[in-house]
Image (cartoon, rainbow, N blue to C red; front, side):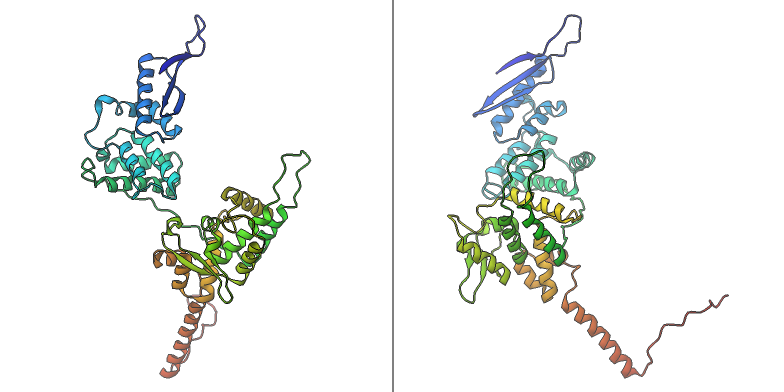
Length: 409
C-alpha cells in the first residue's frame, strides 16, 4: 500500500494537494482520495479501508467512502477500540452468510443496499449491543432530513432489527434490543386500470413498434414491444407479479382439454413463500397457447424477456397513452386483476388465494375500498328490512320536510 500526493503546488500559492489511497484486498482494488494532505490522517484512513475490505469484501464503494471519510465514525473504528460484543459489520456479515437469514434470498441486493446505509451511519466497528433506542431515533431523523421516503427508512430499520434478532443466538450477541418504531406510510399502491385505460395503454404498447427515430437519428430501436404486450396481458389476467411471470416455465402450465392452470409451486421463487394455482381466463390461455405454438428454445413463455426492458416499454406506453396517474406502474396490473375479481365474486377468500397472500388481513386492507356485488346486495337487504319493519309497525314513512322560511324569520 502506498500513499502518493496528487495535484500541484505553486510556490507562494495555496497548497491544495491531497493523498491518494490505493488498496487491493482479495482481488478487489480500491483507489480513492484521502481528502487530506495530512500523512498521519491519510495513513489512518488507508488502514481503515483495508480492514473494512478484509471484514466484508462485498461492501459497496459508496458505503466504503462514507465510512472511511467520516471523521466522527473513524475514531470508533480505530483498532485500539475493538468492542467486546459483535460489531454491526460482523453482524450483517453473518446474516448474509447464514442460509436461514439472507443468504441466497431473492431480495439479496436490496437487503445489501439497506445494510450498507446502516453501516455507513453507525460505522462497521460499532458494537451492535451499544445501539440504543435514542440512536435509532437519531438515525431516522437524519434520514428524514436527507429526504428519504418513509418506506425506504422502514426497510433499513427492518435490516437492523433482523440483525438484532439473528445475533441473539450467538454468545457475543446483544443482550438487549432497542425499540424500533417504523414510520407511517401511505400504504400499498392500489391504482386500478379501467377498461378504457387498459385498452388505450395496450394500444400504445402496440404503437411503440411503429414509432420511427426522430430527425436527429439515434441508435436502432428494438421492435419487441409486442412481445411485452403478451406479458402485460397475462399479468392483468392472472394477477401474477412481474418476477413470477418472467420466471414462469412451460412445465408450470397445464392446458389440457377442460383444464387451464398456472401452477406457482416453486416457493423459493415466490415473495410470500406460499405456492398457489391460478386458473387461466380465456384471454390468458389464448396468449399462452399462441406462444407455445411459436415456441423457440426457451424455458418458459417469457424467459427471454427482461424486467428493465418491460419497465422501459411500460413507461413509454403510459406517456403515449396520456395517463397522468403516478401509480400507474406494472404492478397495478395485479391490483386491477384483484379488484375485478373481488367485484365479480364478492369473495375476499378467493382473492387471497388467487394472489397468494399469507394473511387475509393483507387482502382486506389492500382492497377495502372495493365495492363487491355482495355488498350491494347487503345494502338492498337493509332497505328491504327497513321497509318490512315500517310496514309491520304501522308507522308512516317520514318524508323530507318541504323547504320554506326559517321559523325564526
